[in-house]
Length: 124
Image 1 (cartoon, rainbow, N blue to C red):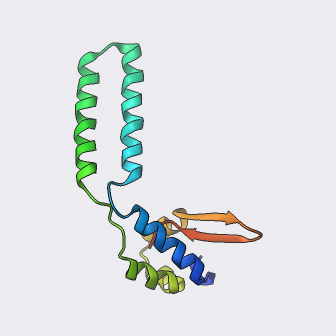
Image 2: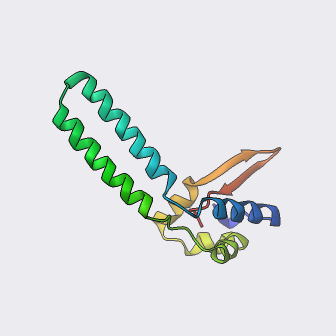
Image 3: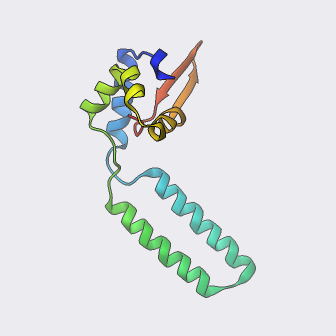
């Protein structure tokens, strides 16, 4: 897939800016999952009135939230990101099969008169 893709300076700078913006703090997808799990536990409680199960779920989710807030995202350095973005065919060729799947699915396709693969910060 990426063996036929090239980047330009604007794309590289956009990705690096996004990387810098999201590099600090917990993974937003983890925080979203915890919030969804909290809502699901409350919905279950509405029907089963199992306070012990609700308490256990909320205690576990509180612990997960505390752990998530204490951790940092595992993102590449700006230097590594720039190097990978400037040579996407190399990134694709050297990626393990699992990473290729992540690369394929973690890019954004936008339509600005043409198809444009834009990697999300945790891809590179």
